[in-house]
Image 1 (cartoon, one colour):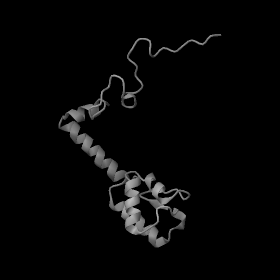
Image 2 (image 1 turned 90 degrees about the horizontal axis):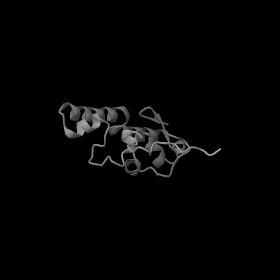
Image 3 (image 1 turned 45 degrees about the horizontal axis):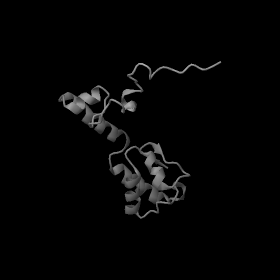
Image 4 (image 1 turned 60 degrees about the vertical axis):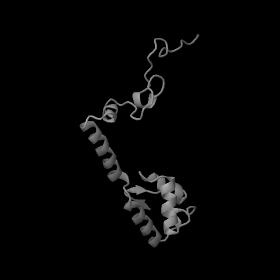
Length: 126
């Protein structure tokens, strides 16, 4: 079963398998399945063609995959263009939502260590 160009894993429950699509998390997957009256514990291989088509249509009705990624990148580009504070933080690859950077934000900044001895490797005793 494919939705928005993503293959849904056949052996996982639908509630979990739908999260493979960018923009569909557990809450949206649960809500979509409840709306269509499909059991969230069912497997994709157990669905009929009619249920599969209805599920595909319901998921693609929302912004998912490429459309959602373009929407998010356009919002970030807009913030940079109007020279907003958050846009500058995005441009510098720093946290944009008020977090401190002295000790945390390793994932955004890279594993940069600022003290003299913190980056040194311990010598092995031979």
